[in-house]
Structure formats: structure tokens, C-alpha cells
Length: 316
Image (cartoon, rainbow, N blue to C red; front, side):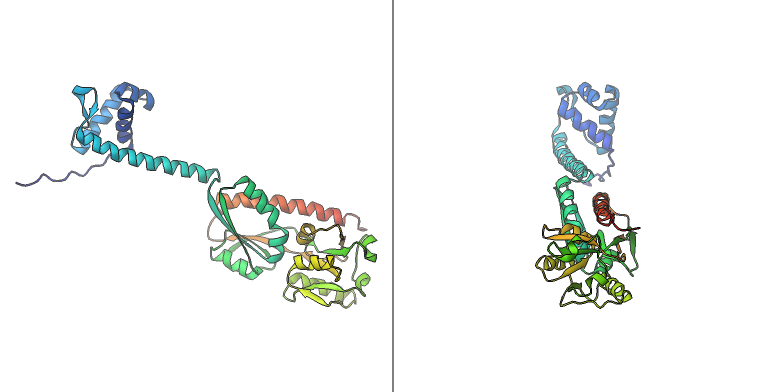
């Protein structure tokens, strides 16, 4: 005996939904109310579904009780709808930032001076999101962003890396961190000439800010007196607090590492700390990344206001 060919079925989601609601409500009329369609429309969907699959779903003589085949199919439908409900909830979680994963990387000065309060604000607003933060050199940050390993990066300029989009900011001036007991603590600003006999805590030789500071001293005809060098602005701030010299560092670290034993002073001439935010050039940032970027912009604006206050007493 030859078997009948297997019929290829192609059901519509509306048919399956109608079948499920009829089973759950126990009648065509209540299913119609829930689906916001007429009773004949529900009956037609069920009939079309039965015609498509090739077997009867309900025993009409027993007030729409499921047939054996209908019971088997209903179990599959319930599993499918459970999966759909899970997907719907997951989509809602993603849309409202209750879940997600954000990867950021930053140069050391920005990682310690700029990002901590931003990460705190972001975590409080989106505590279901996992955030991975890496500290790397500016060239490494740019390379990681270009390769897609990082969603948002922060680096000192210049950045010479293809495959990234660069969001530059208004350059901010370097800040002098002066011990409160130092003779310069009462001065409105500090110049290289004023620092001619004072030890400076220098940044690493590969730092662009260090290069600009050295150039400012050289232009003023003053040699930098330095016995301690560090690659991290945060350590320079802490060493200044220990009385090992005056630190001239980026404004983010200076503001973040303020201490009652130190005062922040403008440096004359203006030495710019130039930095940027980087995102991959081959794709648009995710909604999650955009939310983090908005938090960054708010923090940058707050630090700008603080730096403007520090520099507000300078002569025109």
C-alpha cells in the first residue's frame, strides 16, 4: 500500500493565534471578542487552518473540544507562543536598557579622571547592563574601536587611525595642583617663571600634554626641574599631595582628584589638553552606546564649568 504524499503546510500566524484563543477561551464568540474580529471570521480562520494542515482540530459535536490531533498541535502551539512571549519580554528589556553589554576603553587620564562618575550614573540608571571598561594607551584605544572590539573609546589627540569616527571636544587647559602650604597657593595663576625653582612632577615622555608643557617652559626660557616622573596623571596628583612637587596635569584628573591639601591653579600660558571620543566607523552606535554618550556629554559639560571657574580670575 502506498502512503499518501506529505502535504506541505504553510500556516498564517493569524490562523494559529485564532486556534489558540479558541482553545483558551472555550468558544468562538469569546475568541472573537479577544481578537477584535467577528465570529464568522474566527470560524473561517479555523476552517482554513484545518484545510491547510489536513486534519480536524475540534469536535464540533462536543462544543469545540479538541480532537486528539488538535491536542497534540495545541501543545506545540503553546510552546511556540511561550517562546514568542519570552522574545517579546527580551525585546522590551533591550528597548528599556534592562539588559545589554557595553564595552568602553580609555586612555589612563580619561579612565580615572573622566569616566568613574559617568559609569556610576549609567549603572544607577541601567543596573541590568554589563559594562566592561578597559584602560589602554590612546593608540590602542583607537585601534580597538576601529576593529569593533570596543563600542565607545576615549583618547588624547591626535588620533591617527582609520576606521573610526572622532567626536572632538573643546580643548581644556592644563591645571596646576599646588600644595595648600606652598607660596604659590595664594597666587591667582601660575607661570613657568614662577616655577623656575620648584620641582615639577612630570608626566611620561610619550604624553602629548608633557610635550606641550615642556614647550611652554622652553618658550618662557625656564628649564623644567623634575625629580619624579609618572605615566599617570592620577599618580601625579597624589604625589603632589605628598609634597613631592607641583603637578601640571589634565583638567579631568585635577578636578576628580581634588583634595583639601591641594589647590587648583590656572597655568599661564594656556596649555591645551585635547581629547576625543571615538566610535567605530563601519557601524552606527547602539541605543545603549548613545545613552552612555549622553552621560559623557553631561559630565564633560560639568567639568568645563568647573575649569571655567578656576580660570575666571585671569587677566584679559
